[in-house]
Image 1 (cartoon, rainbow, N blue to C red):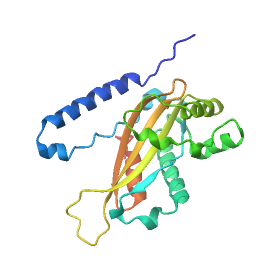
Image 2 (cartoon, rainbow, N blue to C red; image 1 turned 90 degrees about the vertical axis):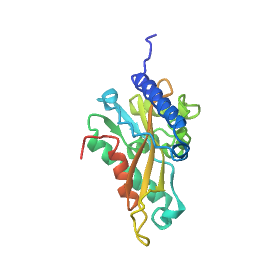
Image 3 (cartoon, one colour; image 1 turned 180 degrees about the vertical axis):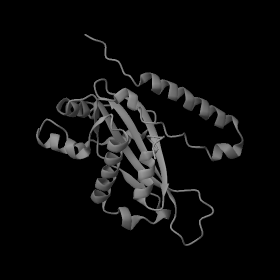
Length: 227
């Protein structure tokens, strides 16, 4: 049997070693630094390893915002919010990483409906737990679900937006009474469905005065060098 390799493994290990070095440096710094750790920079999308591939882009299943933002009215309709986020992510990735053949959430749902009882529902696969940074091996049943879905899609890799969190950005210059500036934190992982492993992960960040601007800037940070 031909040995299956993971083209993202080396990049992942190198990035892991780099993160360990950053954490060690922070631990050795001052007390003030340890209380306010600097977030790791967003890792660019590894398009070189997936160029020409059909890559599934699963639907987002988790959106949350800090109460201080007062965005309840903007994101209270869960289905509408998730659909709008999916549209922003899929549209930007298709435009900014066109060397990849993206299979977006709408197409994944269509594939699943054509194989009832076989394909999993893309909206019910429970992907938010993949935000945990210590997960490398994808457990069942998600591993089996992704493998089954990709067997129908015709591809190997799955891009999973595992969660979107909006936090109040640190912006002391903002006068009181103006809309709070927020930071969108989009957790993203890339999975090799054949071996059930996460080969790449990052948190994309972007700031804005509304959820959609912040998310747009976060997704754009995955492809630096483009306007």
